[in-house]
Image (cartoon, rainbow, N blue to C red; front, side):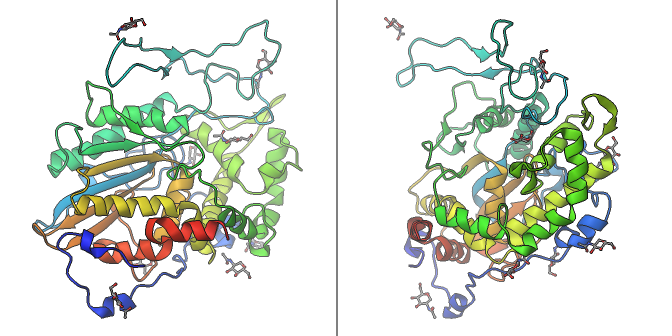
Length: 473
Ligand SMILES: *[C@@H]1O[C@H](CO)[C@@H](O)[C@H](O)[C@H]1NC(C)=O
Ligand SMILES: *[C@@H]1O[C@H](CO)[C@@H](O)[C@H](O)[C@H]1NC(C)=O
Ligand SMILES: *[C@@H]1O[C@H](CO)[C@@H](O)[C@H](O)[C@H]1NC(C)=O
Ligand SMILES: *[C@@H]1O[C@H](CO)[C@@H](O)[C@H](O)[C@H]1NC(C)=O
Ligand SMILES: *[C@@H]1O[C@H](CO)[C@@H](O)[C@H](O)[C@H]1NC(C)=O
Ligand SMILES: *[C@@H]1O[C@H](CO)[C@@H](O)[C@H](O)[C@H]1NC(C)=O
Ligand SMILES: *[C@@H]1O[C@H](CO)[C@@H](O)[C@H](O)[C@H]1NC(C)=O
Ligand SMILES: *[C@@H]1O[C@H](CO)[C@@H](O)[C@H](O)[C@H]1NC(C)=O
């Protein structure tokens, strides 16, 4: 099944030779410290990756990896294309910004509170279409009572997990400002009002709505209510939430939860580190969740450091704490795991196509609907998760995979060189042009749009038909 090219205005037949260059196979990522287990386990530091807060120190150039607030498109660093290219359509997807750390009642065993009185989660319904009575601007205020004998899970305090932290809300707003600075102010591409040309989409996890509200205000500060497009629970392609048993079992056959020797090697070699962390945190050494990957330790340690909170200590012995050296090793291991799961494993491409192919099919359709004039939307914005952005990068076969941090962003830009002319695509990752290990994509800088659409359709099928077949296989 080929891309229905007739829908793309100005399509010119491609030379037959171009078909033969369509390579849908997996290609390994670059060899770097991230996928070199010796450097992960026996090395030190974080190779310039930053974990200590949303703002980089002035000595660190913007664009560097910052787990707490990843680089995105910004006016100062935007790679402006040459004048002959006219921007026509943009679709953005990014991970939500930083949250308050959720701590289970096993970790940390400590007694400090985490309060969220510096923000409100507004939650209300209001008549629309037609408008009627209005709602008060009501928000949740978390409390516990002396009479309720049950202790809350995790930190005592006034946060309602999951919740974007106040700093994360500000990062979201700034992210909106930065995008507007490029696509409206610099390029004159975005309209002055949201109207019918700009849409926003969120997942079924409320934190993406918390981010979207701030981001939209950073872009448009609209006076009227803004719809957040969302798919029904259980089939959401953006999160992703739809069920794909074949992809789930493929992931667990080679990665987390599995027994493949090359996956378990780092877990086995990190046993002494696990023992020290367990002794401090009180996590049971037989807890599968905490020992099948470094995910939980990474998340729980980094969420503190992103908010300038100290690394945790043994509850009754404040002198025995997780050291920065141990935290750094956990951060290196996290990078290694993400690269292994999403890029190094030859099965990663199939697993990602199964579990994220539907969103890619929607992206391709959005571009076609724009190109054919069927849809007036020129800018689509998706707020998602690390599982979404990682799988997307897996399908795009990014040359160097990392654990996608807070606010991690991928932008698809469609250009033409005149009315009715051929269309080209550029993909930005972290605000810069994405380099793919796939020879079909290469450096995605003014790539023939048809080639990109053929790549997507070749992998996921028309209307994601290959995904459906695969998931049920
Ligand atoms: C190339 O693509 C065209 C259009 O989809 C198709 O008709 C043709 O058979 C393909 N040629 C080769 C060599 O695959
Ligand atoms: C990955 O390798 C390719 C090919 O050698 C190179 O062009 C690219 O810059 C490398 N990527 C990084 C991030 O170093
Ligand atoms: C780390 O160094 C130790 C001691 O030199 C060595 O035994 C081990 O194999 C190294 N780990 C890796 C993954 O290379
Ligand atoms: C974070 O800050 C600590 C000191 O608070 C420092 O030791 C560490 O090197 C920093 N780590 C990173 C990755 O910036
Ligand atoms: C911390 O660990 C818990 C498991 O107890 C996990 O559910 C949570 O996602 C982790 N992450 C954060 C940010 O706290
Ligand atoms: C929360 O507060 C209660 C009552 O002060 C205390 O018993 C409990 O240990 C605290 N929980 C945590 C996780 O700190
Ligand atoms: C507000 O609610 C009242 C009570 O149901 C109803 O009578 C009234 O028509 C509503 N007002 C508007 C403007 O819809
Ligand atoms: C892990 O081992 C399997 C089976 O030997 C192999 O096919 C795969 O390429 C290895 N994965 C990585 C990331 O090296």
